[in-house]
Image (cartoon, rainbow, N blue to C red):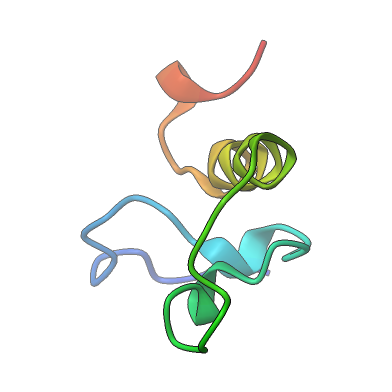
Length: 59
């Protein structure tokens, strides 16, 4: 589906990827504010996949 991206200033559409680490709720809930290495790696992968910039996409 084509999405009008003129209002997206961050260049990231998080809905573009499967949201396993639930970044929207990080720091919103008590005891959900610490990222271990596996969480961080998954979050970074999700941000790469959601990115609109081809130069930071994984090759």
